[in-house]
Length: 142
Image 1 (cartoon, rainbow, N blue to C red):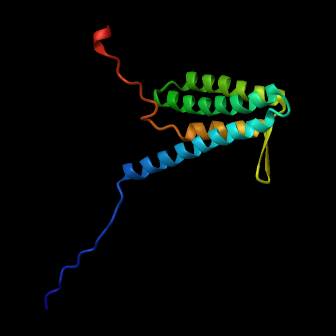
Image 2 (image 1 turned 90 degrees about the vertical axis):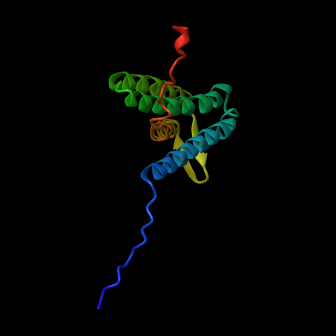
Image 3 (image 1 turned 135 degrees about the horizontal axis):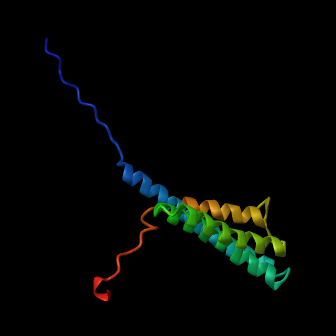
């Protein structure tokens, strides 16, 4: 009796496809954070111009600080990335804490610094290596 060869069908997604989908998902989450910050900040204008402005600028600064820090890390600029991230993120948190801005989403309340820290983490997590690449300049300009 001869044994029939059995074939097993394996379906594997390529690693790059999975990671690409994760990056896209993180970008969507970061964009949703930005949109939520802008929409929610309009309620802050009832408390004053500066409160509403801090609701728009501070989370955006923190989102950019996290993204910029990750981008600098991809280029092995660890010290400069950390310092720039702390300065820009610190400015955002300082501005939102100075004005006393807070945000309420459904039944959860976030103080301003908490909402900005969410932006820092999302900005850092949503930045991929291809986002951090600097395009080559035209060699005819040199």
